[in-house]
Length: 503
Image 1 (spheres, rainbow, N blue to C red):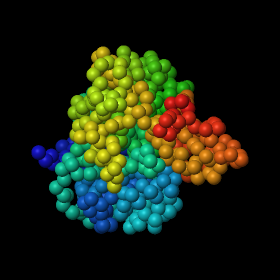
Image 2 (cartoon, rainbow, N blue to C red; image 1 turned 45 degrees about the vertical axis):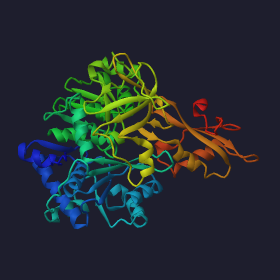
Image 3 (tube, one colour; image 1 turned 90 degrees about the vertical axis):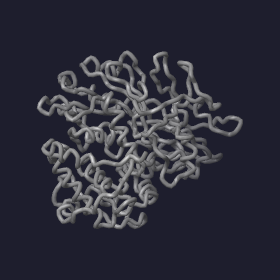
Image 4 (tube, rainbow, N blue to C red; image 1 turned 60 degrees about the vertical axis):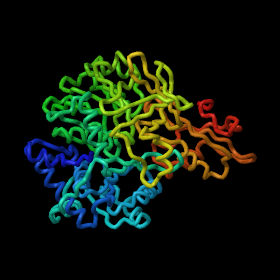
């Protein structure tokens, strides 16, 4: 059965036209559903005039802004593919991503104009469209005002691609995870139930929208339900506490990574902030410590944990808030429309509690593959089952726990870091004989990178040389924070570096 795509924003514009859809807290702009519907139509018309049609890619290099949502839903109306870019990346990193996606148009913030111009020629971008934090007097707003009505919407199904989200690559290059319309829909359903998303939901979003956590926990589920999404441009602990504690704003939902909750809990205003109207505060992106969960529970707010990936749109498991302390450390139970299994190294299923295996997931929320990378798709997906790369176990009640990385990826401040990408950069130094990147515990960011380096005979290399070399070649969260020198890296009989020994 082919499932047709329906337009969420247009539906709510008819049903509850005056309901507030989005609020850009930086510029102070408020848009009802009927106003958002009009702006999405204008954006679709503008993109069509720039040559964007079904299957074409439109990239955005934007901080958190309500414009982000307009472009996303405009792409849906054209059958185009939305490509959100991580503005923390360097020009060389973005050049690969935009070139791989083949974006026709790049919509960018004025703060990123220099980066956008550097990308245009090598990536063969046809048009750059600039917007600004103030939301006025910019090419984007002029384009919306002058746009002709968009063409009739194409007949899309849940199998059509809506978004490409790039994740760090295990082979040194990012991979574009294909996100279909169906994946985004089923994530809204999967998260909506356990996390109480409905028409009256009001979300404060502080996560970057280029991330699946920002866009889909819980922005898109709230739009699907007809609720209200408010976005801040940058996260600041005191400002976030002030917003969350304001009864007139009445936020019902919030989502953050452990670092966000840690920084807020350390702020002087934490003990006096009233969280009484917050129904669900989600936490993810990295493991949460028991003391952090207990700190927030003591203030009357149990944090709802879960597990997900870009490739899973993202929810795979969810832990209801009332179980946050009873199952501390657990990522919960599988969400409603998703299957999970644990697979041993020999490929057999694990059926006994507290036995570690690799977590696999299958369902309508799972990516069909990676853009332009059939080999990576074949390596990652087996008969529809996505290999998450995470080692996990389940307890006697069926609750899942992530215990380690089946692969070598680590998470720093909610961002996935694949060591191969960082290692490739350090290998550019002629003094380096061998290098391995491992994640090591860090109080602020959960984990940070440590470079373990073996220097060529007769060569001299200092820690500062390695760290300085990485500064302009990698995003800050990918840069190693320390260097350890060894005579040689430990390897097994087949020559693979034993990173567990290094840790």
